[in-house]
Image (cartoon, rainbow, N blue to C red; front, side, top):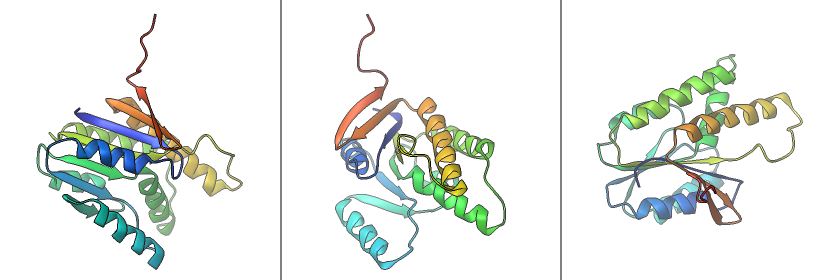
Length: 184
């Protein structure tokens, strides 16, 4: 197991647990890259609980500049980035605070550059966790639709680069890349 492994699925589908279990099976130094912002006491409690569940992991919290974090991780390490969904949310929020707007081209370019950065970093394996938001209802507002579109572009970009892609449904993993079935 090496390269980029993308783990996607709905909220509370078991993505993070699955990625953590897979990553724990790799014998290398481990880094958990968390993108969740500290927004309230409930989130802070979740963050602390999750840190306690990850024994033997170094946790790095970064909401926006993921490339600089990958620069600081030693060669041969295993990284679990949780999650791309919050990263896109954080980028949208930062752009809104600067009175600018993210475009699909901007996100595609950011994801492509980050993916290339990861591939060139000599890391053992990088697990990327993300939400699949394209299977639900069309959001009722412009910002929600923009988020869905930007995350979809991000997920597609990383899925193309990934060596393996897993979809989690109700705690059950389905490997969708490479295909687990043989074509007859």
